[in-house]
Image (cartoon, rainbow, N blue to C red; front, top):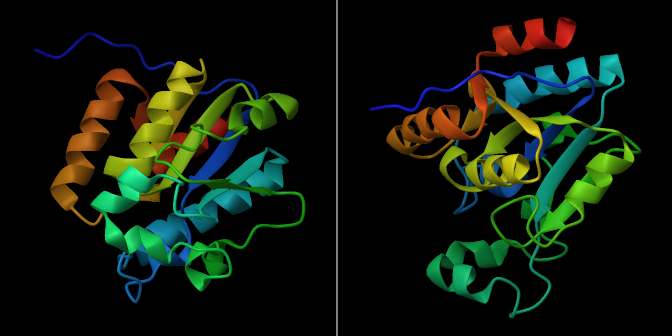
Length: 196
């Protein structure tokens, strides 16, 4: 039986957090990647909207500088080892290229909050809620959503702007996030929220 829950939407100053929309995950040429042009296009649309409204935008990427960083995680998934400094795979997808002043946070673990100063950066720009997008729904997106809630942010996930190589995992995690941690909405519903 599902828990009773309330949709609480966004605050007065939401930030857009694009999780790991890097070449390593958006290009099928990378062993970590998947072909997801519709997810990239949805994020390009949201980026334009947030920029037009002057709302904060943050990106994450994954970079491993030495063998000790996230060694257990990397031991489980060898393909992660391509995410090294200087590699094309750590660069934000060119369709979503950050503008000057838009932060790209390096992370080594799953959540955008874990081991980073994301919370401080959000507070420094007055963000009171989050729109979390990116890849993958069942991995880094979900972990970032849970940690966003645990840092006491309202979190909204636009379903068209997240993706996963496994469609069943994608749907199951959207269901679970909506049940407990975030409001999972359509892009159209999010645009109405942002228009208020």
